[in-house]
Image (cartoon, rainbow, N blue to C red; front, side, top):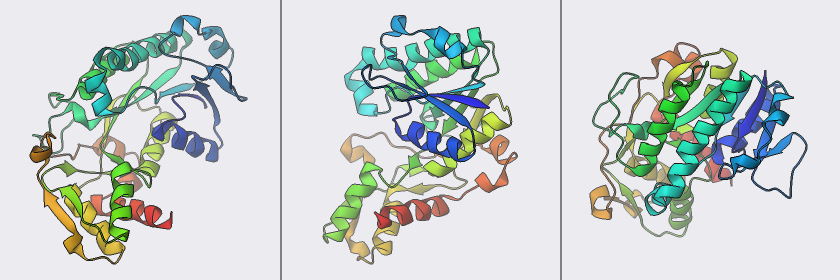
Length: 289
């Protein structure tokens, strides 16, 4: 296996690079910085693909391409509609066409937000109902990747938590100072650790899984529950954690977050994590910082 990661400086991309290399895989990356290119790195700006030399990719005989590029901020997609659409949807179009031409299997991380949260354990055939612009764009990109005519994979991930997740870092700082924090009690999540997400991506490529796949933890929790767990782990009074409604802050409510992950879990049962185990794993990393 020889992999090319597009978007290697983002959350998933940089952790995936480390994970694949630790498993002896030859990993190359792309960069948007035209003036700084390291070994095993190509210059690629998805807003200026006409300047990209596809021949240099063909020379390396890659087996897999992981598209970890694009915008991940919901607010940015709302405030910069056209640019975000161009990057997410246009980028997927360009990369899928390149993979088709070169015979490279494309692996595309997507999001559980293509569902509106009304169905628990949403499956591959559950009707998509994206609400946010970001989710609409990712939904469009999914269709492009899956319809390109090659052995491609789209993996919809639920919320990925890690030690640098902004809200967790903010909560930790406030709680350590004895200050109150506010967390949604009505917004569900079935989180994954970044390590589990990378293991899943490696598993999909190694086992040549194709089509549409899902991965979330196997149970649901709320942001309020996460904040309480962090507070307890820091030995602070849970009275500091205040439960609030997402609707009061203009955030859309979300009843359910669990996905039907049976296809992935049947490949490697060690990926089957509860929300509680995931949260404890991430909090442990956070506290060590």
